[in-house]
Length: 448
Image 1 (cartoon, rainbow, N blue to C red):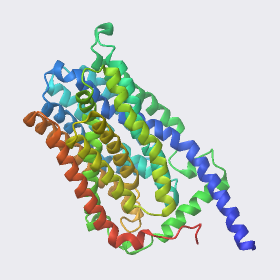
Image 2 (image 1 turned 90 degrees about the vertical axis):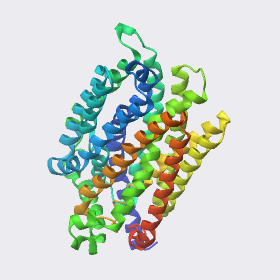
Image 3 (image 1 turned 90 degrees about the horizontal axis):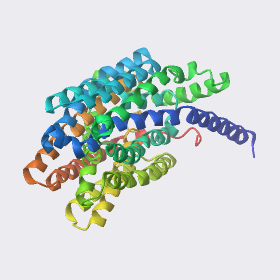
């Protein structure tokens, strides 16, 4: 073995050790933050099992309560991400969590349709920028070659949340009448306050970047800076000569925004309507059983996502991993729509969860590519793509599905809409992938 090869192996070992240390320090904590974040988004889906009747909400009116949350979230998305880049991740993520936790807990005070809409709008404003902010924060720590795995371990928090929240929410709803409060009011209170506690913890635990991390040695800080600088050097291309505004309006950003619209439509339908779909499949089941049945697809997804992310990184391949995941989700929704057998419909829900979340973790490797956005354009670009996806898929989707449910008495037509959006997303990913394949296939430093 020659000296150059020995030196390369030594560098690789040191490199792995540094990033494993960063994984251990950051990813688990960020995972917890995302669990609490997504819990505050989806608890309204379980609250709907009893809240809709108490507040006199139709399916369309309930869908609107989800829509106003995501509309407010989307409107404040880009300003929030730009503020994170300006004031630092530690302070801004803490602010997001504290304010949204208080607003989410306040949902227990809703007394009718309009008060519910007002409070959910405040929750959306408070939480705006959290997910894209964290994804941007990860780019401060992890180079391109291990970003899908970092995204996977973080985004794994979303299906994990569904599993945890589904089980927990079923039990909390059983508290109906305790201390004079109905179950859904307890749900918002008990699942909102943890965000406030964790937001305060962020002020002491997070740092704005590797240079501020006193838990890293000087050599480890230099190693991380070197790897990130190597990525930036590889990204010195024609994009750096274009203005940020022109990059935000580019063909690829528009296509990725449309693709994310389709993917988020599936993700939101999975988070918002599945408890009610499961209730229809498991006639007469208790809230606890409905929670457990909703949790199982999410638990299986938690097991799959890190494998999917590792496969994408190992092959340095993104487009097929994303398209196959979206296709799996579409097949799952078709099974829910087209088959009357409860077992097959439930299997379809498992496919939906696996496909939607594996697609999500792979999707976010695209905006971080040198062929899509330059480093200076990424804070605004990631926020814009997420804004369109959230504003469209999560704001429009619940309203469409709820309206069609009221109109037809069934989820079928609404879920057909979800399948169409997924197919549109796959087409957009294909259009992005073809001309950018060469640009995104930058050789790994280890292979050089």
